[in-house]
Length: 144
Image (cartoon, rainbow, N blue to C red; front, side, top):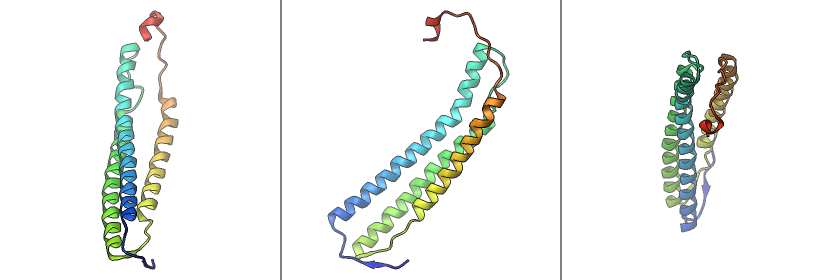
């Protein structure tokens, strides 16, 4: 990519770089949170199923474990890439040069797309694996 000569970074440029970094951190936290929820959801649903009916597992825990851990790893990688991008941009602003790089954006978008497709396929497969959960005659207030 061609480097653009700019005036030395102003306070506004540095603050914009910091805001961008913090936005990537929020994105990473969201991805990590989603991974945690996916990993723990099958365990929770299987416990509920054990209380309500058959002792068979309705959701294979291995799949949600793998997908959940991969999402947590993706979130961690996003944090590392955000830190690298932040420091790289900071140095360029100090030198008065700016080299536009879309590597972080393209990498993260591609990985999120792949994991989204994995989650979608996981959700499509799960309904076919669910056993019938019998209805109990518990009072309505019991479920509230």
